[in-house]
Length: 558
Image 1 (cartoon, rainbow, N blue to C red):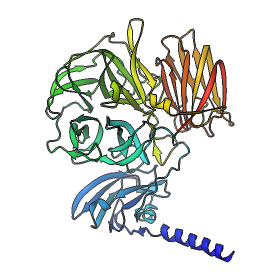
Image 2 (cartoon, one colour):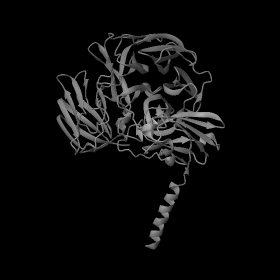
Image 3 (tube, rainbow, N blue to C red):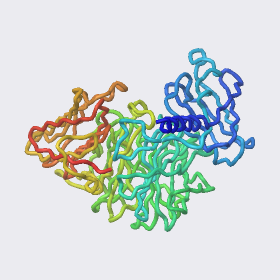
Image 4 (cartoon, rainbow, N blue to C red):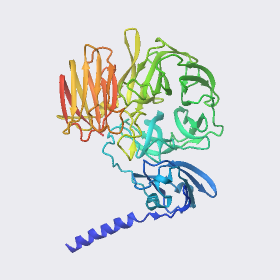
């Protein structure tokens, strides 16, 4: 008994020693909005305490009297929401000077020397990114920590899917745009990789794309400085690290919103094409070397929806026709951000839409599907896309802290016709079928529900607290609706409670519904309808009621 007690005491003492092994820091307070920290590189990370309600402070990292990095951080004033790591080992065993300028109103915030961040800031050899969020999805891609928005630079090479993304390593709200990186061999299980591309003198790193060019991977992205320009970086190790081109930027313009380049090799003209967003149009360019670009044409004037800025374009050939993806914010069918698209013809110089100018086609009729882009070089001629699963109306406020935002499940695109119009079909990628597990009797927080539909149908998912999501298929009107107005926590935004409605382009015979801890994605099994919505139930939906159909529930293997 005494031996066991001593063992427990030694274990507790060891844990305490580990907890206090990080080095405490003493700031130099220079004024009511300015402080400095001298940091010895005795560990890998400087752990920065964050409090999200505070204003961003501007941080300059200085080594050998040279500014080597800048970032913005919401330092904790009176409580710590979470920590983020600043890698200081990358600068070698040199002393690091951290220069911090605060912007908040000191009359309401308090005296700088009393901020809690000084007591909590530490140098440490480790950073704990183990999950602490009940709403973190199980089988959707998420960042290990920090903020994520648009998927970027996605490509497939040597059996590996590469997903880069807009990433803030220093907080869980939008800021410090950098390319994060994850890899997968099955589109379900994702491995976090080191940061791929960081800000530089030309600006932060906004959205862009990657192509494979021989053995190399070439990234082209937006440098967001005083103006938005396009830059390239080259990887010789399959996209793990990149060297920026010394001749950046490679493409400039006087258009304010000039971003999100997406190149592809066009064998029809034996050259590279590139499409990028320019205000409320898409510009098309051509190049022989990915460095020198020739303007070819623009598309978009008077076509489709112009309720917001056009972003994150993609241009691909599907079943003999060309499809131009155009993400827009705001202007979505139920407010905020969404993905529209156009079907037509492209000769390497000009895109011609086959529909009338005022026709608007949406890829997904949910509230939380944006920045849809495809993987370059997907196998077997597939067109595999992933979207950011959120909405700019409330993305910074959703009820998570350690991380914010997930990506949709992977989807394969095709084409179908309804009347005289061509539409893009959206189906869960075959990898999702491979992830299907055993049948279960009740819904779980991570499951797939397959519904064989008889005619019109109503399906209700609910929990013990009376929260529910109601999905309704109206066969006569050919519509599918999802009501999340009573789905759970919606206190963070008035724009969140909503009923989303989609056309079904004919009869629905079977629905596939994917439930994860904070999302519901519904698909017509034939690909003619897709709808993605976030939900934040206080407890998982474990009850199901179906009228007009039969539901089979499967576990998801993850």
